[in-house]
Length: 532
Image 1 (spheres, one colour):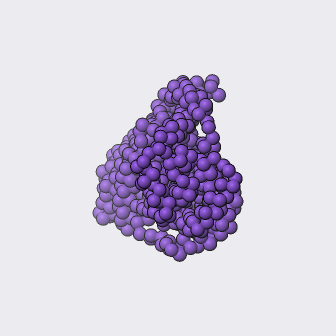
Image 2 (tube, helix red, strand yellow):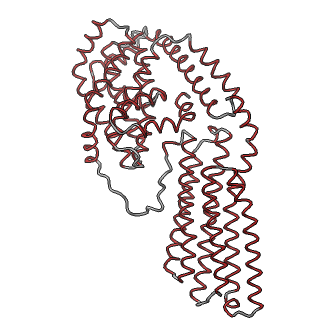
Image 3 (tube, helix red, strand yellow):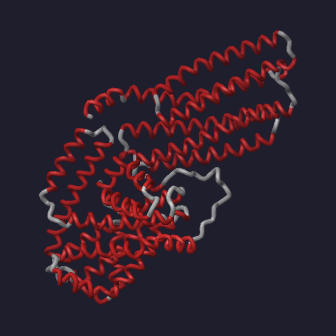
């Protein structure tokens, strides 16, 4: 709840922090610490970096520096959570629940409220774990299971890595190990071994999660794995030294575990932060990158699977991919006019293959959107969800009109060697330019959600209707005048104008949804302004 609350409230800000602060490794490292302290998950930060790397937004060296910072960030959270904060638990729950009821439909404030509730529940769960672990210290069976691990370091590492994978959180795993150590259930030596295993498990989680992603994303998790495994192997022979160190310092058992967890990640940072460029080079040698020259058009560029748990970012990804589809469809529209003007059938073949790409991308956008949990969407996000789905579907319909109707009309005109009259072809070109201009406005409306632009497009629909009517009247006037070219191309002329009108109807629908939402949320915006 904490991670989801903060990512949904400040998702773009957190990602911007990572994306912007990567011009040197120190700033990247610090941004990793900061973002992970907020998210309480080094895995979440690592996945953001992997996603950026796959899109070439961040380099491997900078991303690895962020990941090192993320590893240290989780230890700072663990340090805070081991203090006795039980007094804070009811306060956080009360604030969180009160805010959630008050701001149930107000986006960011609701998500912040959920983060407060999550933090309260974390403190409550830690209290329960401590209370539950105390009697386990007197158990006869559990020590029999766990104590042999002390003599089998490799088995202890595997056990802790497995526990971390099961919990999907190194933070939770380390806190449980600290609780078991403080209750006397396991010895300090075994606790230290299990902490090493938990840190190893923390590298396995994102490694597995990125297995099917772009090679550039996998470089990040491979590099993280290399650094973690190397650090574990370097520190493992010195476990006795760390035991003696902590015994001399006389920390409480739970704090010894947390301090060792922090120390491990500090050592990792000291060892590898100066050499992240070398680690990056090793990753690129282990898994060379080969850009796929095939199917560039059919492969989505912006649908980020790692963002699905963060609706704000997931919807932005889907919107960006939909805008890419809009650009492709716009090119199809321009190409049909070029083919009509130049009588070039080769361009029509390109239009047909492009429509296949539009269909594929539309399907992938739909499938991506179905993975975004509707329960996690606030009202504004639900509206955006519908807008994206509707606009992408309309784009697919426009592509079909261009491919199956307009292109066929152009092909008929070329094969039958028909010629439009000079006035008739000029009308078609003018009508095409109006529709193309409206298409550009529709794309701007889709991204900006600007009600003024939307109203302009809707009002422009009447102009399109009048232009079509005037074109038809002039066309029949030319027929009455007996112009031969007009007689031969009469059905072609009217059908092309009809298809343009159909395309304009699909284009304009995006404006209606924006205007409806602007009216629907007018009162809500007034309330928000009062609150601010």
